[in-house]
Amino acid sequence: MSTFLHTMVRIRDIDRSLAFYSLLGMKELRRKEVREGRYTLVFIGFADNEHGQAEIELTYNWDQESDYEVGTGFGHFAIGVPDVAGLVETVRSGGGTVTREAGPLKFGTVIIAFVQDPDGYKIELIEKKPTTSED
View 1 (tube, helix red, strand yellow):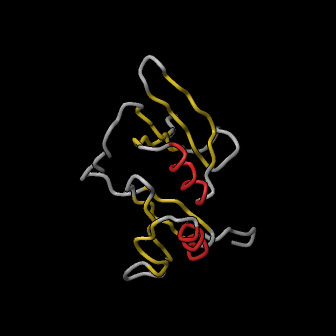
View 2: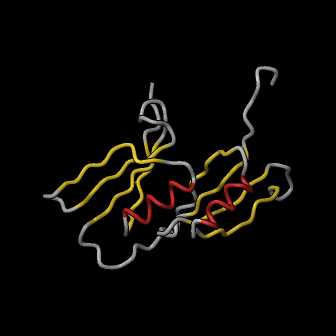
């Protein structure tokens, strides 16, 4: 059986990116420095380990002198959260960029918002209330 492992994005500043993603509740799972290739890989996720979750691979190229251009074919990451409005305020108070305030999806009732990471990647926050045994 195949499984989704990770999505890779190139970043300009490891500390700035980790600070942003921690606002969303993600944490560093592992890091690999490749001196010969002059890059660092940092894998982040929500769980305490990489088993059973998709991750984001942050790739930092040591010699990159200018910002990357976010590809025109890239859309966004989507993260399910229990309280979109609350997380939007956490991102805002942590210095992050909110590009769409929390509110219902156009022509729908699902609550969403969009935030942007320090390198310009969009993250859609989708409200997913925890289910109970009666659901």
